[in-house]
Structures are given as structure tokens and as C-alpha cells.
Length: 87
Image (tube, rainbow, N blue to C red; front, side, top):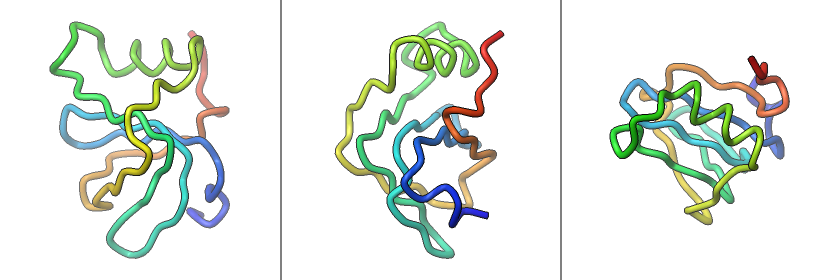
């Protein structure tokens, strides 16, 4: 399944209060590598995870990392950016 997401913009919801948006570059059994990523700590704002991601749909991904490595065991969900529903 992850093979189909390589090169796609994705949203990675983490078990912690972080969300990561970016382009999936590669993956293995332990990690995901994203490029042009926005790693956002939800504790830094009063915005909910859903509202932050929805705002990113409207304004685009606010890149703050050229590359980021995410531990797969910390992931709660992965969604293609274009599959997000604007409510």
C-alpha cells in the first residue's frame, strides 16, 4: 500500500501531538522519509489537528523541513493530501 504513495503529498497523523505533511520520498519497515515537509507540534497552537490540516488544504503545506524521518511505530494514520475531505 505505501508503494502507491511514494511521490504523493501525504498527511501523517502521529500518536503524539504532532502531524506531518509532505511528499513521501521513501520508506522501509521502520521509517518513512518525507521531503518538503511541515512537522507541526499541535501544542504550539490552540488549533485542533483537523483544523490545522484543513487550513493546510486551503493555503498549501507550510514547509519547515527539507526532509524528515518518521518512525513508523509512532504513526496513527496516513492519508493522501488530495483525499482529505474539506468540511
